Image 1 (cartoon, rainbow, N blue to C red):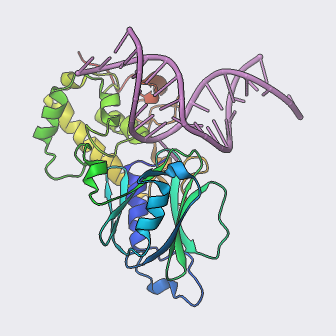
Image 2 (image 1 turned 90 degrees about the vertical axis):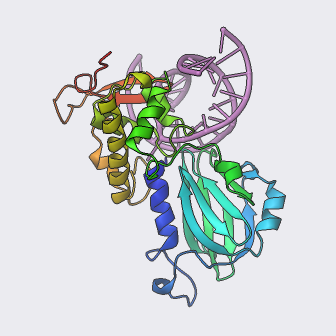
Length: 284
DNA sequence: CACGAGACCTGTTCGC
DNA sequence: TGCGAACAGGTCTCGT
């Protein structure tokens, strides 16, 4: 499910969940997000969800800690606690919600963290790919990630240099989180369309002009995704509307919004890839 | 180094 | 209607 915009949407909601239900005597409108809440217990319903440490150590160590902040690094959600960091990766089908602790748990709930104020944070993940970590140093989990697309240090010149030093095809390269952190299958297809670059173009064959267009396109589609609260496809993701703005993703056979040529779907690096064969040509 | 295949999982949709 | 194949927003590991 989630790429950078979906994770960012959740991060912002965790800071200001004003529309979420709250509990007994509690005053929802005055709740400043989950920041400040203190953890009483953690209930691990699917052991493998906890990547580090063991499920037992996780429950023991997280007890009593307080949330001091929420942030994002690539597709990782970071919940800062006094003394430690709780990281969540939603992978394909993960989702987080906050609710009163008296609610019955739902199908596919994998982890529930209860707060002393009677609320709780629940991790739901149909496909069980999602993982959480509880560590001293978040860098031990996110250390290998490439730059965030919105990092100011990521200049067009630096991005051009990154592209020129790889012979890999651009689409799998954009999905490589050690190259750039946060871009997934939807936004890579949309960005390549916007930049007019064929998904199989070797990165080092993208010229200066193309690299400038591509970086701008990545930022543009991610920003638009965030503005629309992410993309909701199938049953996943409440609230997001970016799926209504797709130009190519999951639009195989439909006319290109720019030239009306039918959008094509192909496999690139085992991932479904959508592009316009007329607007996105390899100029080698 | 770059790539494909297979694994990890459950659910939905599509074709016969 | 039923049933298997293909597919899904991600990432890891292995073999070539």
